[in-house]
Length: 67
Image (cartoon, rainbow, N blue to C red; front, side, top):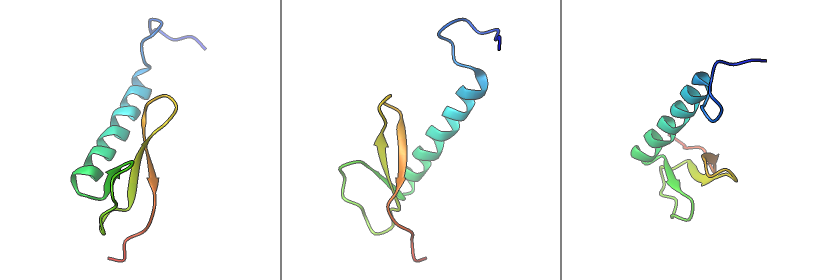
């Protein structure tokens, strides 16, 4: 498969997906529905934000809310 991207440049579709993932994580953090790894989980939080081997933030669901 050929691309028109310079080596080292991210594919626009992958870049958009990565931005959407980051925005979703930021939104969960802002609403108190997620905490960073190592922080105490408040009652309304359902996710923990962890780093993968590449340093990217990933969500891990730890529980469901009863609301």
